Length: 391
Image 1 (cartoon, rainbow, N blue to C red):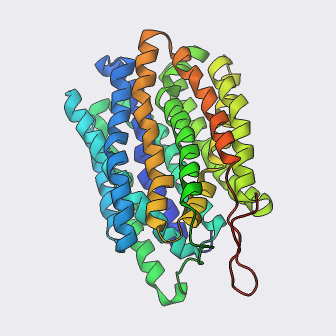
Image 2: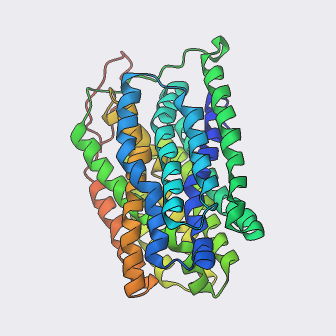
Image 3: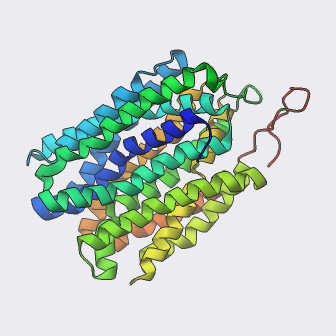
């Protein structure tokens, strides 16, 4: 764990918030079983968590670039939890959609400010940012276990119990902010980023992250149902597939930070996307127990670039750290949810395997885009900055 106390607290609070992103796909099999939702209706719930998030996340990023808004961290955490807690209370589809959308707004509000705060607390360190990102991955991983345990025991009407992580996370946010302001914590300023910025590179990076987002959200939305088909199991098999998908992301995040220290961020991003292509192919076409192996490989490969792309985006837009964080950490992830209904429509018309097959092409596109990116140069010993010229 990081020795930086604010980063450690922010990492755990990040886990508490991202539980609610992971909770949405974990709820899908129960919505299908209890309310007889079709693929399109179920994917609409995933869309609910992404739609408003996609619209408001850039706004929160711009706001946090202009004003420090630390109060957003505990408030947004509570909002994210409240939405999921209310999602199973009513049988009404519009009310369920609205509750999940409310949770998405909370998640959207949390990420730009938390990433800005984490960058300041870490002094711009890539390893510390990987620990912050790891918290979110662990929250994703815990979500299917938590949701399955609570909803399987009490049904969808037991969803109010899911608010507990939000209460804990909001308290941790308060403690993290206090620890960061503590004199013993030292100056919490991020290291200055090189150059004046590169908006074209940031745009290309964002396109690559969008490709990654569609793959990950598409798989996480339907992997629980697909696991039942490929392994002949029940809802428990689906929950296990989600757990493997999310915990593999935690492993990939830590691995990405370590690899980048030796090989550079851009190079690691390229390798990861190249490895994702055969891994997703295995998820779509390989049946039986080996299915879980390919799920783990896919998750690790998709998450090796995760924290690296956050710091790359911040370095490409050094004067717009909140905006860069909102896009690379939040907006581009939410956009993946916009593709989920299309996958659901295709699955209803054909089969789930046919609907997931196009996801194989997206890591290849992300790999091609990543080959156009440059590694931001580090400051020289005299304190001057070089140009973004090392591939």
